[in-house]
Image (tube, rainbow, N blue to C red; front, side):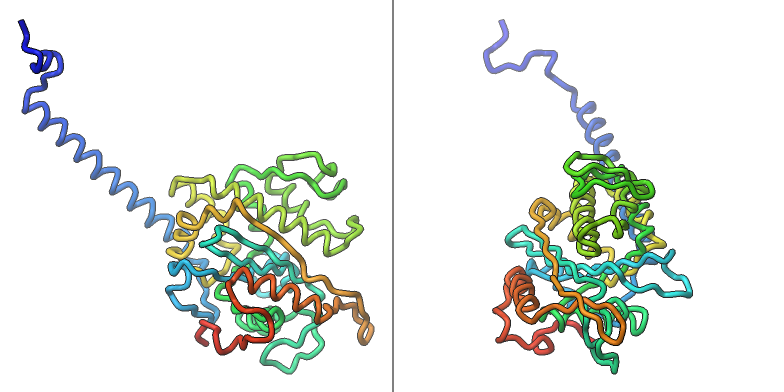
Amino acid sequence: MRRNNAKPRHLLVPKHHWRRIMTIGGLLLALLGLWGYHAWRSAQNTFAGAYQSAGIRPDGSVITSGKPFAVLLLGTDTGALGRHDVGRTDTMIVATINPKTQTAKLTSIPRDTLVDIYGSQQDDEKINAAYPLYGAKTTLKTVEHLVDIPIHYYVLLNMGGLKQMVNAVGGVTVKPLLTFHYEQANVTKGVKIHLNGASALAYSRMRDQDPLGDYGRQARQRQLIKALVVKEAGISSIPRYQTVLGSLQQNIQTNLTFNDLMWLRFKDAHTSRHIDSQTLQGQPAILNGIDYQVAPQSEIDQVSNSLRRALNLPAVGNFQTDALDPLVF
């Protein structure tokens, strides 16, 4: 009879078999490690051409510190980046991310908002003129001083890149805010629809049929960004993420590094489930025959305080941007 503590014969494995199993397992782990490293380096190389500091150099600890931070999203719609003609940034969104509260906020700045462009002689100018006149750094500083918060990063996206990125993640699903047919977008208000790259781009572009005009377009752009961020957050493999980065390679410029993106992707992806949005609401005005949107100071203060709460900053009135601004120029 077999003793109670004796192992059944079919469970006994000779030592040399264990050594073989351990050797094969070790080789498999080594191969997986090499594959993962190769995929990481390949994705890093894919994104390398997108990095443009534009003279904006935030403290390297901003992303990894766990503290809230802001990113200025700029969208142009005049062809691929690197072109000789530089278009106005008709899409301007301040994205604030708070890792501790796991929340994000998208704040649209209307393209016709009346501002004095920071550090220049361009007074009474539309804010979307800052980029073609003076570049990303001046645009960022102009927005900083408009809403009275420090902004650490910028992302400049050719809207054609939006089409490619939506395709790279397999399309996005939205619930249209109104009914319209424009180019490849044929949507019905309140009826969910899955959009591919071409139809998503058309959905974000349409303005003339929207009773809210540019404000309606901004709402649809924020809606698409939310849907895209949520869809992208579901991508778990580095090789597939490389495909997404590849879709943007010729259409994006940013001072976010690849390591910054990876940290955001795998450490702060949970914020994609809690995205709020708002708009700096202006009032129409005509100056010297040109149409503007003029935001009342009360509206600016309200939006500013909303952003400052998201960044754990005190209310407007006790803050000097330059004193706390972590950027080095």
